[in-house]
Image (cartoon, rainbow, N blue to C red; front, side):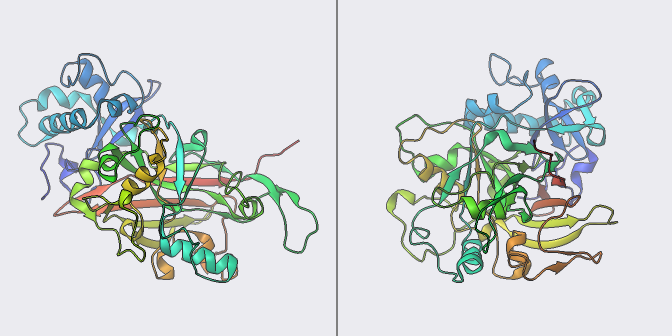
Length: 417
């Protein structure tokens, strides 16, 4: 599909992340106005709440956009999602007869503050990147061998929806228990091995009933869209607590997402296959569509006071072993009910080269091999004041589908007691 031309001039730049082909969904505010739903188009935001109030958008007999989140639209299902996308395209396409009515509803993105685009119902994080799993095995256990179950099921754990925040929200270094290898007792204090995880987040749009399994194809149709996701990780806290029940406090202090939900429809031209299976998956994990997407990803790091950020990793979402649809299917296969607004973290996305590793744990090999930034600083793990940025783009025929940056700065730990 080539670039779709819009009467919003900035949307026609081949390198702009928000062309008419994209139309991602977010929540914004200006001045002292309350947050409201908006659609990114070029350098502007279409006030979707105002468009609905003025009758330019009428998808149902009741309002969908009188609330500052997109969950109400999600619950309407794929037919209404498609109708909205079709209507937005008609309103914003070059030659639209309704341009004059729509123009007053555009807000310059530079004047807007972005907020959480959805109410996160529940959050589940997966461990579905093969290279990352092998790297972690080599670092922690001296062997890249995968756990016996890894090639058969998408491994995950239930996280904290309350800790999911929008890009730009500062993250405080967490306090917690850690234990040095040669120490007799654990100690308490700020994490010294703070890390990121480069992930994609899949947003569930329509739910499933308690007790009812779903297929991979049904799961694929349930996914509303995707965001960039940074699953901040305190490796030393995690290392002491994770046996036998897995991550807890080392993962519960913050998860950042990008501010725009890029719809599954916008990503449809970029579908990519999952890799060849080393072990044949059980039949319930089979689907009829390619489940991954060709999305270029990068991680940038900027120490406080540095004049620019350094790119420390580049990889691609297609490096994953399990797709979001396979993860969602497995999540519900035992009867777990899924809800509109559920967020599924893909797991850390790493490729075979060190330049493609999606965490500092891998990039510095657990701090034993610190790397040097373009500005001269060295890092093993994150220091206070560092800003980490995730970026993602899918490249089409004369256009780019972007997510908006996922940014977080690490602040010192808060005092306790």
